[in-house]
Length: 389
Image 1 (cartoon, helix red, strand yellow):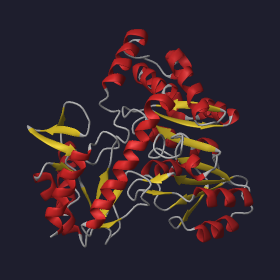
Image 2 (spheres, one colour):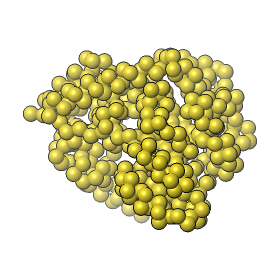
Image 3 (cartoon, helix red, strand yellow):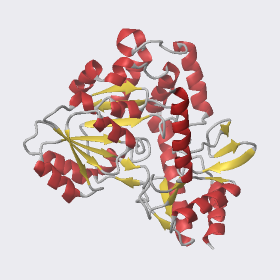
Image 4 (cartoon, rainbow, N blue to C red):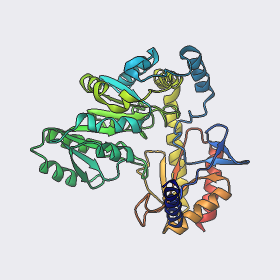
């Protein structure tokens, strides 16, 4: 049986490779940052979610090291038994304060936060409305619940309203959207979605993993940028707010307490490593003074880089307000070849082709960081110029 199983996997892996969908990681030696080492070669990194440049920060390494000294290596238990430390409760209070919501609950990742949300608060007789381009963690989380599922066309308010009209008789209605769509660098139409949510007495949940720390005047993310407050917010410390990991759900005190009682990833999995929580707490407490200025830098880098690419004649996606900058190419083969040429020139990017993105929408997704200098940007633009001719 084992041999047959392994042989079946060999065949299926061969099919994945034949279809050009084999994912082979590049192994980085040393720290994440604007400059990285892969193998023995130096690269400029333009495809990390390291928007504020904190992932390789000496300051956060020092803070996390102090966290290890104070809190030890781990809790060795789930939260409700003996796995909750003072640092976890302090961080949850700070999350709620930072995002102007009543309470928050920590998870090991935002994927866990989304996996533990929908089946906990939605049941048969409820309805959930999800943008067709929402993140995989939202899609998988919704699969776990027994609510009626409605998928609306991407950022199409007419389609969302039509679906809401169909679900008038349902007990509980929940609209779910990414704050920033990670493949497109595009902010959700949260103001309009919020209006529809109020009109049809629906709850609004936003996964702002790519927006937190990046968008909004105070860096509170896409809800702040759009002038709304969601009923439920999920996000991560694995991107702009540190880069190490950890996720959370924030909302009303009643919601958070209910999740503590019923959410399976919270109940049956160890929480965030205390030292990582310690560093995340430091980021939030010191964000306005120390880290918010980095938002201005990444915004300037994004504008400069997009202007350079447009001058070279490239077709760009995204709304220009977020560091995610998709660069579109005519077909899959051209995209893969362009990424290979850039890699040879020391620019670390990855090609995204079907089925990761729709057919005809192949792209290289460039992600800017506050850690990038003008020299980095000009060198990358020079490499793109070489493939534009």
